[in-house]
Amino acid sequence: MATFEVSAHMTVRPGQLEGFKKQAAECIRITREQDTHTLRYDWFLSSDGECEVREAYTGPEGLIEHNRNILAARMTPAQVAEAQRLAREWEAAHPSPPRDRLAE
Image (cartoon, rainbow, N blue to C red):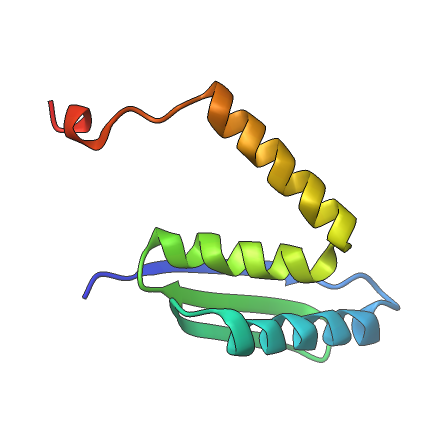
């Protein structure tokens, strides 16, 4: 099975470690509860504020789903509705070519 992997490195600003830990815990909770294509979502945090996140998904669609879940949890219902409206407008203005034409 092919996987799609992402790795990120961050440095937490001085004085922000506890807030960062709370946000990381919330991201982990959302991932466990909502993601369906996530194979790995590991956070490594050192005492000096260095953080590395390693993620693996069943494919690119897994990362898209994950990002959608995280963003939706951090947005108000009005912001989600506005984002959905904008996405519909963009899709209407930029239609995808039919699938059979992609093979040509």
